[in-house]
Length: 457
Image (cartoon, rainbow, N blue to C red; front, side):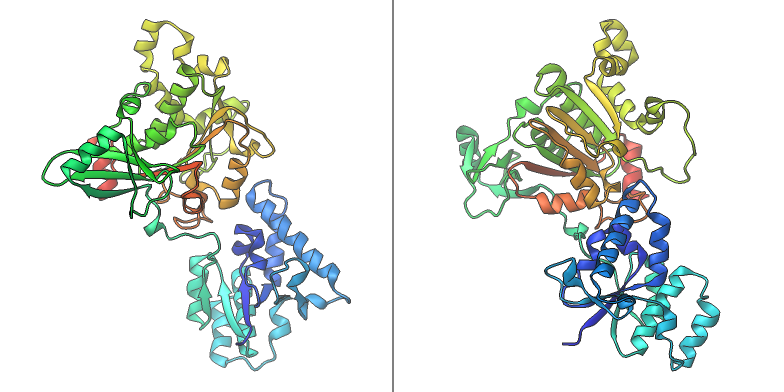
């Protein structure tokens, strides 16, 4: 089998610093224009800057392993940085590949339609130049438009698939099944039944209905392969919230269980993801003292055009980004009128923050922290990369619970999509683990208008 040459676009390296080692026994080609673009990102303090610096360090390690100068253009074994990679890495420019024999029609395309001033077009030229040299070339890019241009000039193109999941078949956290009326009665009397031949993961739910009746039951798979009936009394009312559908009831069951240390809630606008997470957090922190405080965070990524600089200290800046959290907290705390009747700072957001029971934090500052005995909520987690989610979850100390909420179809991060974001990746990789639970919320409960908009717009 011929060794393929995978030509990587800049956004692939910025998405995953490990992408260089992802092609095993094939060669990896990095165009010179990509190295120039990495230089522009290396000073950034965000995830893109971190990945750019890591890639540059790996390239430099390969350079140092060479026995003579200029070896990068001749190929350096990737085994220097990865024991599983047997191919070579090349750093090439189009000038080194152009021998004047390129197809005249394609040459005209590059001269007039794809100008050499654009870094994207310079990257494409390297890929095409390699193909003209007889190499079996695959161009890898996360830029849809660049993939279209590459295909138009006859190159084989692919998206970078590492860390991607099939969001259309994403784990929902529950299944539906049938029982006879007698079996359903037995389930309620014994509180659990064997899973039998049913293929369920631990902490996955089963929604049972009885033939010929309106009876139903919710059960959850435990570690002993038993389907255990969900205690409806525990989830009937949590703080100021009652579940409005079976998915919300299942979500509250996971959120209130201290043995489930990581919960992911996926759903569209108005399905109650953030509200349920905050209600469970307040119940466990303020009433049951199961955790010391609530820590709420969300990615600082704007919808549409950014409004620019925000005045004030960290708290003042965060207030604008955290307004959706404040809206939900205000609802849970009963509104201004009820707080005046109760006349206690316990029933105000400011009072919770001043007492240390509630902390709002930007994800920018979470790296390096250790977070014990806290109920951590990360809202809008679909805007995080798989590496960022790993960084956040690995901050969890003893007796900490993590909750990630989001909608994979509402992504504002230009480098992610419904299949490659950190929330979808976490759901797929963690399913079946004893410490993990997940529910996909399907029905909008915000208002009749919000539900109509979610369905039709």
